[in-house]
Image (cartoon, rainbow, N blue to C red; front, side):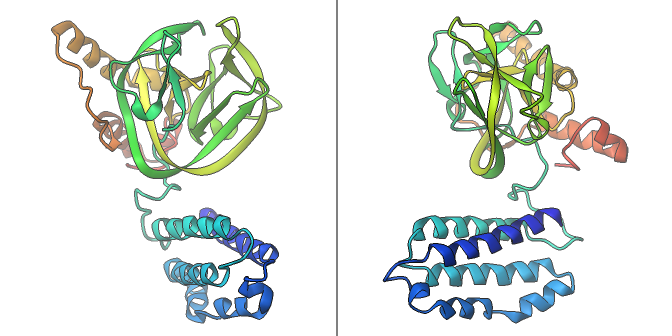
Length: 321
């Protein structure tokens, strides 16, 4: 229900923005402010359904309200921004509005599942070339950090999760050194001294991120800002070290788990299989990454959740995936 409240509050704030930003001679709201009231009265049935606990019914009403609002704000200042924001909210409503006895769909970004890096962020090769997360392939050589927190060359050995169209909420960290990295809320990021913290628990007053400095070594950098934004496309590439340097910021490859060391230990079979393929000369797959979650972490997660509440000790996925 907390997620629904966030959605409803955002809708209200955007509605207020529409009224404030609509100062144009071609703006219907400017000519006749009462025109916006026709949208408010569009469906009283939805409000009645909401009082009865029918969240889906309320969201259907909200979608019609937002579509009406988009029509009424044509020609207003900030029209493109408002229409784009309302379209995103409508999409969220369609994917995430369910009643309390129903399960959220896989497409809903509120679903707790292993997300990771934004597809638009960049990994770096040992030759100083940048490759977008979207274009990474198994076998690519990239920069990572080892158990001694030193920069090393690593190899992409698998993808735990890949979605080129699905949406997720990203925490974008901006450091004093000018570096930026976008990761999902449960993703672990390096904060020094072999320590990794989930993005949602990062405190700028307490933590610093570690970036590649001018001398080519890791240096700490103070966090200037943390922005949360809905973005499309994410992937979870992993290396044999379980780490990856993205946008020159050091990070873990793992998410939806409390400790980096636990995640690295759990992924040992994937490292073993990759090494065995190399020894046996099995060709590395280099074609396009398929959308979805790798069968191994999915199976492992679902087995852990057979433990009931005890599963929360190991993972933050919140249920089977």
